[in-house]
Amino acid sequence: MTTFLTRHRIQLADLTASVSGPDRGGVASFLGLVRNHQDGRTVERLEYSAYEPMAEAEAERIVAEATQRWPVQIALQHRLGGLGIGDIAVAVVAAGSHRAESFDACRYVIEELKHRVPIWKKEFYCDGSVGWVDPTKTGGNL
Amino acid sequence: MPTGDSPPPALISVRVLLFATYADLVGRPSVDVELPGPATVADVVRHLRQSVPGASRLPERPLAAVNQVHAQPNQPVSNGAELALLPPMAGG
Image (cartoon, rainbow over all chains, first blue to last red):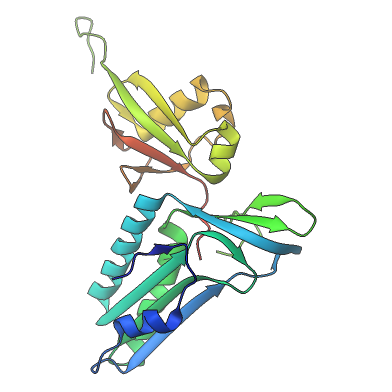
């Protein structure tokens, strides 16, 4: 299994291959991409940071929960460091026999990740200002 | 509960980790604190906010993790523990 946190470009095809198999005919994936706007402001680039050992451990716990609940295999990666608009920040791939369990597990993993995994996002705006994203405030993206 | 004859509570050492906006507020990524034990997450946060410059600007009840597992305010913190204060998470 690849490590959850990566400073390299996320390769969806590699993640998909890592969980594919002859018995798994339903594969669902979710990609989170860097958006060019947040709360009406134009975003130029951003930086992700994490409490790395806990983020790895919490991601592992979430994947374990999903694979206990649904008969799927999960691949999950999140980028750290500097990203530009359109870059993949997070990828979840769930592979099961059929689509239902794959969609459900994929959705579970991304929602839990957003609530539980200690990762933070610093946005650099076109006007030169900088801000930490707080999804609990109005206009957040949780 | 301590009685009149009990020895004073032993001090415990806790490493507090700060991230993102909390590290900016306090001006550093970690603070080592000593306080009387036994202590809970809330006790350590209260001690930090009262004794470390800049830390009074931290929330009174931040999200927290003890030794890399999410923790409630009333969770005990033992000597040598790592207490992370977690700003609102923004992964994904």
